[in-house]
Image (tube, rainbow over all chains, first blue to last red; front, side, top):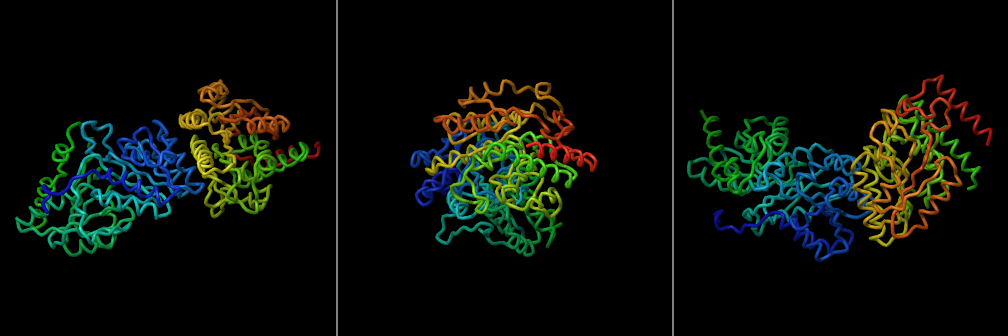
Length: 319
Length: 275
């Protein structure tokens, strides 16, 4: 299916949908918001289970602490806010009140990355993966589409311990709708096999990398595309095996090239199989206002941008 | 327990604090000593707990939001029977379970990890709310420093707890008047503390932190208060019980040397004998 014809849904929709389903199964699941229930898509949970939805008002630091207290007495709290506030504003609360005691708090961070769009740089969090993956014991996931978002939320509930879930505001194509799709925390997936270059992507960049791979194929470049939903713990085995096969790795993420998927992949490769790596992402700059699609294009994260960067990278390496 | 029994226990708690901090050669004696009677009252009189079963489902919870005064909490827990008093000497040492700040993963009786100021009160509010959601009737107590309440998160939590009418929550402010850099009113005054909590829909009351009759009255009043959480502003003396530490900001986070330790223990022995 080409990217134009695929169904397009924002990953945050999958978050809300999964919570409603899980609410029936887990009576101890509660959802906390900081005045953004409509935007984080937890509003549907609030409607279904009003007695288990806690709006904490615009006070994210306290919200994370309240969640820690709820987890300490055996509840499963999902803390929801924009990535900027969940991972940024409340970083130290997540680190000390949730991470250090390894409490069973799930952080559902929406509106991550530049696809926040028109709100601009103040709300475009390109640093959350980096922040969260430095916390010992924290699982970090960034689903590629709505299907994977739902699956990741359901897997997070079954996992005992803190989990950071990263969702986007903007719609993106559904790519994981095949009958064989299955999700496991810590497992990456080869979504397209190739031999010349590996593209390890996360979030919206997975679909865009597949689009790029189509174009690269027309130029005779065979790109292997790996969907990395779980950035921590990273599926090192899969990444290393692919790198051994292709000898060249490109990472693609809607996040700073510092500390995100690109860094995680480099950390893994330099241990076992160092190969040249090219990081596609936000190049150590702040974002800006604009429609999500135009921003994705400007920052080179769309199919055309990934294609161009991979082609240059492969060309340089082959010289 | 009678007041005399509580006074004797509190004196043992103070000795444990000195022993631990002296052995560690670091730590926070001043605020541990100012809160020693509060720790004693909570663990020997007020709270429904069982040292033999520290994870008892319906136990009352205590969160030391001013986590740096861990020696005070550890000494109370040890004297209450959660772990050997002798272990206090391992405080802050490599390999010891008695971490510099409370660690719920390792220490029997510690209900929440804490240490970064302003965070414990939020977790306490979460536990109190959770108890109500689950239909359980245990109570949640949290102790804050008067310097700690300069942290903005404290007031986020206070707004939340007041709005949610968490009458199973008691916030105690150890009002010893001193923080590391000096007097709280000279640094960034949090006064009036009672009016602030009252403005956040708390029942705000005062107590003498070193008078068990007064503590008994205050905690009973908290228990009898329905529809709102209670804040007890506990007026205390930093370093209480050790002559040279009393009212000295310098002793916020410093351990006594051997000579000073001998003086401190002699002070506490004298107090013990006078009871």
